[in-house]
Image (tube, rainbow, N blue to C red):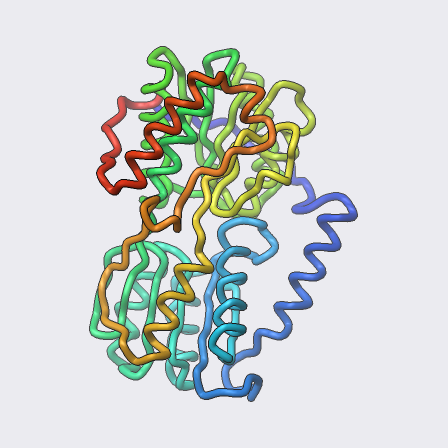
Length: 344
């Protein structure tokens, strides 16, 4: 049964001089990402990125912006980025980029697929790509990441590391890829420890770091001692809570977040978005692109489980070997995530 706890107070999105400095640097770099038609860049290959949240989240959106910069540097592309909030914004900005003659436009998230499908036929010279979903048109493709595979390993690690036997998942909103990831986490946890209790909850947003911290503290009151977060900027609040509560561990997502709370992080579920973006951009640039759902998994090393600083201290050697053996099966391409009972 899914449980949700109240969230109230707001906290600053990022705290501490290092985080403030990193945010300023990212914003400064973002200024270089120009709006359609401003004339930046040195080639006719133009690539745009739409993100649903800030690129300062050190997670999902930050990895996308890193991918955009990799395309710029590798293919001498002119690039543009904009943060959008609503489905109406998705479609409007897709049309702006299509009308401006961009070669490739990436909507970073499952939620962009409907807008891409509606817009694409009006701009046949532009390739639209979404990260997530199954929408395919002659000039629309979707990137599909097997996020469930490393999430399964994260569940095994969380169950092994927990002293209370109660662990949790904190998500931004109930998007299908996030729900699938959490289901895999539950299955992995129960494989490692059948009596483990897993609480799954959603914040209802991806940006409110204070809400993420408040939710984590509420879970800790329920004796949760390991939290897997997939909440972008809001997830930074979970790291804040873990740093303030001795014995509480956290698992990062999307990028390697092990350095955000080194003494409290047992690992991260990583998606190498920059590598995936560059592979697709190379196809578009070379005019070899074919519309399809492009799937990436552990076998491609695009998604992976990356143990954190305290993994070896909280997970026994025998349990580490069990995790390694499952990961070996994943790398062979023959792994299927088993179904899991409902979280308890």
